[in-house]
Image (tube, rainbow, N blue to C red):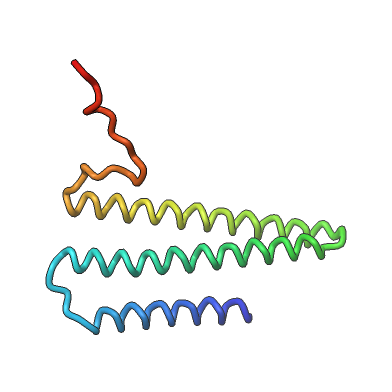
Length: 124
């Protein structure tokens, strides 16, 4: 029950912060809208990763204190699996958002950070 109230509180804080930011200024251009979406998704992504780490620690705690009880150990394994799936979904969601932003802005020429373009170094 306590976990549900923590998750609910996190969502309340998230939506109040995002609505307060949106109310602070008028969004006039698509770039401002994308900047707002990026800020919100980055905050949500970070929050989900922190929450997933907490669930992984909780699953480890459950597994450690199962004391040989097969049912408790299975419950801990399922909790760990669900936390890992949540991390994977969060990473995929972040990638989908970045892909959608690239498609909407029409700037598909951006290279990933650290990318080295050696095509100009080739002598014919």
